[in-house]
Image (cartoon, rainbow, N blue to C red; front, side, top):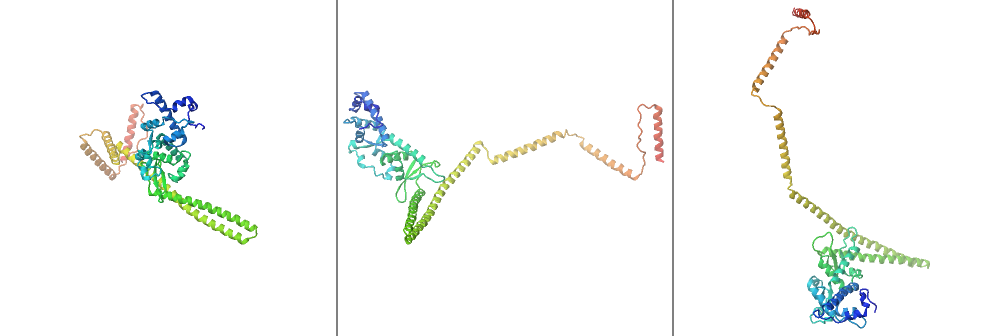
Length: 418
């Protein structure tokens, strides 16, 4: 029998493998031998589970897996007990009791005979938890890679059987697939639902949704619409093939000279094409409904983002102590302060007030009245005054010249007076 890829190099060494295949001694007797065998077989069991894509093991299964010629490992029961004690493996009954959600799902592969304490120890099945966790991560990565949403088409809902067939490169059988899904459910990445016809449906976590995943009636409706669309696609392909074959038969009939039969085939072709058109219209209506559902979810996400932004803005204003009333009060205070500053400036520029203001005002009023009186007298009497002299008075004139000038001015005044 050829060595498996997960077998270590020492597997081909007869001398060393003879020791590893032998019964393990008590740790108190030989701790080195005990630890060496426990470590070797524990690591090999983990590698074999990943390579075989199977997280479910039993003592009988491991004996067959690690059989080396006529040699069978003699310490596997001790190794399984040690792994169980460390929590690396659990019996299927322990997994079931740990995850009550699967009881509601009613997984048929859980056989009560395997959970009984009376069961044969060689046939007790264990779940290798590190392998189940690794397969769960691989399945989630596969979903995120292969089931990418197209535009506004929600793809978080996947049919169980369809997805199981798509994951055959990750898990060996349905049992391992079940335990990998159990791990995803435990982590909150997946939930299991049922359609209206009882089919099992997987719903993966939507990155835009917070909180636990919930299966709703709308999810079942989306699944039913997709099933109807898939059925319509198959019908359309079948009818297109039928129309194509009818056209070929019509050509053959024409070549053989049977025009009636050719006409019959052409009528069958037209009927098939009419059915194709009708089913395509139904398909497009369902597709539009699914697009609308996806768009509705996008709109909800946008609305939630708006609400989050408003809440953050209000929280920031409250944290900074800013509100509209406070802003109005501040602006009013600024206006009052500016008005007060203007009053102070005007008061300073007006100077120091005098005690004689009233006397000055009375005197100014008297002068104004006197000016009005004199102006009235001037209008009553026509007094002709001499014109303004135009001759310049020389600063260097002698005393005789000044007397002459004065004499001339007096003379002119007399002439004007006459």
